[in-house]
Structures are given as structure tokens and as C-alpha cells.
Length: 358
Image 1: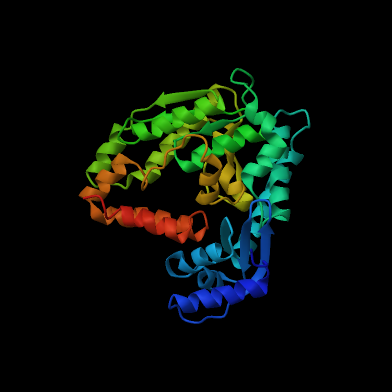
Image 2: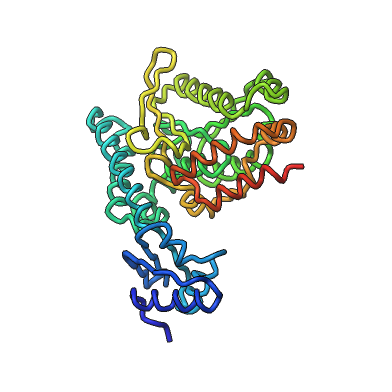
């Protein structure tokens, strides 16, 4: 017989479990509970991050036992302070998208997909504790996902690297009705290895999205990185962006979508001047204040294989030859962690991967 799911029950059981497994006694502070009876899933909103830690316990032992004792399929523990930050960023994004829509005529092809993004933001803000991407998108925009429109007018170019963030961006862009064309910049296997290409090919085929590889020569960057003169990520990223914008202009497409998770809020959509022409840059995951876990959950059924660490062979070699370069990669990870794009555990795993390269 299942126990009643209420705050008193949760607190009593957490305290009991902590005592049974030898954890110190702590106050259990809960702000809100959300129980999904259909999925038999419980979301616990704590007052702050330390309260979240007290319920999860060391190594996740406490919350694991709690799930078993209450016969739940899963338990999600989140802190209210994290939601406050996310809600604020979502509201800034919503305002920026609304401002962009104000400059568009309703007959402009971009008006509909940007309106769909606006409505998604609005719904996520109003249902911030329980928002589920897959359910929302399937309910509201499934027809866009199923549409076979490779040869129709493309409203956006999506930069696709084969990683989680860009794959998530392509899937969301298809759902929202951008009818995207995916572009992958290919500097060679030292930067775009076969496992990323396999992800790219599987995803674009499954989504029935038109896709192109663009070969570039960045021999100078590779040589400078392997000689210890530069950390490659910044310059590599700039080169890729430039090529994607160039492709968009050559194909008369005014919107370019990237999987950037850091440019949240008022920076989620910006004007980009390239060759004296104005394009729109939309950082799709950032606009929705998404973390990597949300991205992984959405793309899990689309053939995207998990790749350990950054997955870049060039960066692997740079770290191996010049260990001091690791600090610049770690700075990047910490930046994403501070923004909540990465969970602490994910960040730790990435950093630890730098020390398993010998």
C-alpha cells in the first residue's frame, strides 16, 4: 500500500532514512511538492540548494531509498532558488522575443515560428516546476515534426555539430516550424570525428531535415594549437560561426540558430552584421533557459550517442601535450555551471575526463 504523498510524510521518511544510513541529522525544508499521478513521479521543490542536498544525500542514497520506500517511479529534487533564476531569465527571453515579433509583419514567414517560441516560453514560465518539453511539443507542434518539407522554404539555418546542444536546437527548431536546414562545418576528423558525424547523419535522417557538410581548411589553427600557441576552442568556434553565417547569406536565409546555452535572457536573440547585411542569431537552448539534462531527455529517442568529455580529438591532444591548457577548458565548464547549463555532477565528470587522457 502506497504512503500518502504529503510534506509531513516526506520529511519523516527523509529523516528516518538519513538516520538509518548514518547521515547526520538535518532540518528538511520543503517549499512545494508536485506529484504526477499518471507517471507516478514526485517533484520536490526545496527552499535552497543545501536543502536539496539534504534530501538527495551523499551519492544519492537518501533520495534513492525514498523512491523505493514510497513506491515511486522517480523523484526529482530541485531548489526554489534555482527556479527563481530560471524564471527571471525566461521572462527576459519572453520580452526579447516579443520585441522581435513587434518588428515583424504577421505575413512574415518568421512570425509563426517565433510566435510558437513565445508561446512555449509563456507556458514554461507558468508551469515552471512541471514543464516537460516532450509532452508540450508533442501536444502543440507534432504536425511540424512530422512534416516532410526538405524542399520547401527554409526559415532558419541550424549549426549542427552532433553534440547534445546543437541536436536539441535542431529538434526544437523543427517542432517550432522553422523548417530548418542543418549545416555542419567539417574541418576534418581531428575536430569533427566519426562519432559526431554518425550522430549528425542519424538525427537529420530521422527528422527528415535537409543537411549539408561544409568542408573548411583550418590547418593554421590546428598547427598553432598543437605547438602550444593557442587554446583552440575560441578561434575554432569563431571560424565555424563565420562559415554558418556565410552559408545563410548565400542561401537568403535570415535566421541562424546555435546551441548556445550561455546567452540567456535579453541576449537570446541578437542582430548579426555579416558582410554589411543583417542576420538574426537565435541561441535556442539559451532562450529557453535549458540545461544539458533537458536536452538529453528530449533527444534520447533520436539516435544521439553519448560522447565522453568534449569529444574533440584536437583538444585531447592539446591537453596531453600541454597540461596547463586544461585550465582554459575548465574555465569554460565552470562558466556553464554558473549559468546552470551544467549540473555540478556533469561538470565534475567533464573536468575529471581531462585527467584520464594518458
